[in-house]
Image 1 (cartoon, rainbow, N blue to C red):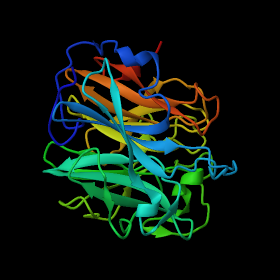
Image 2 (image 1 turned 90 degrees about the vertical axis):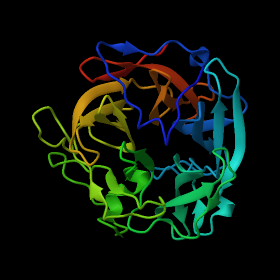
Image 3 (image 1 turned 60 degrees about the horizontal axis):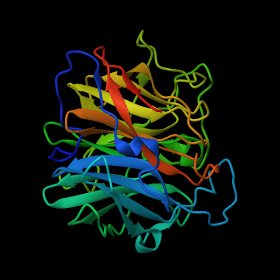
Length: 343
């Protein structure tokens, strides 16, 4: 059975004395839900129930491009699992782009958080000028509907928001995605509109992080860059295939902060570790090998005493922009490495 409680799954820790392998689950053989395409899963266990927040893939006829125009998602879904053996209950259209005053299109990867009796949905979308901003919406239920704030969060942009609720209840917002995600167009808290990439031998662009205010609706401090280094402490370079591309997700496991992210063109999910939510994070290795489809995006969730990786692929449709959310057992190795186990 699914178990666990608290503000999120990220703030639950346990002691690893040897490699801990999550048990097989019935849903490992296929997508969490059929009949609808879902992607970019964000998993949280609240009051003994696993909730998976996902974007909703549709074929709207939008053209493919380096900017990801064919990823033309317009609303969010929540998948509810009271048992990993199923069934999974899909809650439709918990927030639609038409319900967000400042948003115009492309509701990409979301995340969620809880504080008290309020649930928060963090999401990216292009505004009416085509700039990716980060929005937040609230609800009295984890399955919505969610009501969006009238303006995006000031001081931060790009895509793929993820929120860590730490042991002391501090909340940290992570964002970032290169290329179509526009991270390369931000200079601090200013959108420049100009693509600025480092040279291949220069330190890579990293995701950004800022602590949130107590009500989770705004930044409590200026955002800063998260640096990912190699084992010697040298920042990974822009030309390094291990460097950050998109999809930052931070979990605290056994007192260690794990940054999960996608490498983009090399199509792997990898992780790095730190003793601080701000980093720097030291690269540790591959969590998930490439799957069907160009994109790869995931989150880590603790169910009972075991950890799992939520991810998506395009195996069912054979089309990059029509994906399905899946789950895989996660091995937490004694040395702190993480690896997912797929059939």
